[in-house]
Image (cartoon, rainbow, N blue to C red):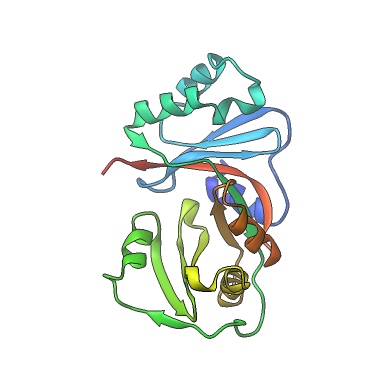
Length: 211
């Protein structure tokens, strides 16, 4: 049986689920992570709930079937069923690793009490955080065990390409594909990641346990 990680690894190679308008339901790979991935004309729901229940709820959503898994009615039902919550639907981007050293000097933060470390550990495992001139780079294992990156740039140095350098640095630190999740309305971040070579492959919503 294909796992969530199998689907993600294939997408990182540019191989996507068939665009047949179907929804695939796969088990969660961790207790922490449940949610939905939306590719072109194919969705993946990763949950330990009964696939028949998922299919029945989707049939009752009054919208274009291709959009049903990201429809608020389905997502609300899934959150109610699982006792989970969510923040936003994100764009899902991925980039291959790059050789050589990062293009910006980094200093790893090992303090587990650092605010960025504490925040990241609520959503990821094996979190590592680096400080750079004007920003912070965060990497860790998220959905399906994939390697995920995020960056934060100081307001004083915004619009100078610092975000692009930081997320490019993540590609040099990695030896496997690097994933990013960005709220579509955060156009500045979307542009920074795309300028660093990250390619949009779909959309996702992560459902997290309350508390």
